Image (cartoon, rainbow, N blue to C red; front, side, top):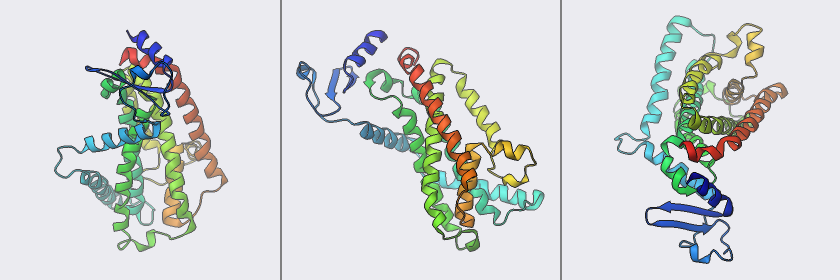
Length: 298
C-alpha cells in the first residue's frame, strides 16, 4: 500500500493529493488542467508551497495556546522569570563582568528558547502530524520548517519585552546602522534551525531515540554556547574552538549589534555563515535521503 502511494505521488508531481474517508481529492499546484486528469479533480483551488507553509505555521502557533487562559503571555513570562532569577544569582554570587547584564541575559534567553523549542518540535513533527503525512501529499520538508517559523513568531513577540527595558537600561541599547543587521542575523539563525530540524525530523521517524539525543544535545549545547556568560570568560584554546559554534557566533553578533552598535567583522561573518551553510547542506541531504521512508515508518 505504501509503495502504491509513493508511485501515485510520483505520477502526479505537480498535483496536490488529499486523502479523506470520503475519497481522494486532487488538484493542480500550478492551476493548470492536466489532460486526462479532469475527472479526478474535485477542488480547483491552487495550493502553492508558500501557502501550505503559511497554513501549517499558523495552525501550529494557534494550537500551542488553545484552551490557555493567558495564551501567548506565557511566552513573555518565561524569559522574564528566568532573567530575574539568573540576574539575581549571578549578581550576588558570581558577579559577572558584564555591563547591563539583565539585557545581555534576556537577549540570550529569547534566542535560546527559540532554538530549543523549535528543534524539539521539528524533531517530533512527523510523529505528531502522522495523519497529515499519510493522507496528504505535499513537500514534506515544509513540516519541520513550519515548526521553526511557528516558534519564530514566539521569539518575535518575546523580543518586544526588550523595549520595556529601554527606560531602565537606556545605555544598554545603541541606535546605530548595525541594528539593520539584526533581521539578517535572525534569518541566518532560522536557516540554521531549519537545516537541523529537517535532519532530526526524518531521523526521528526511523530511530525514535533521536528525540532523546536532541534533548540531551541541547542541554550540552546550552553550556557550550554563550547564553548566560560572555565568550571572553573562556580560556584559550577553548574560546577559539567554540568560536565556530554558529549559535554562539550569531548570539554574540546580535548582542554587539543591539548593545554596542557594532557590526560583525569578517571573521565573525565566517564563523556564522560557513557552519550554517554546512548544516543546511547536510541537513537537506539527510532529508532527501530518508524522506521516502517516512510514509513507511510514521
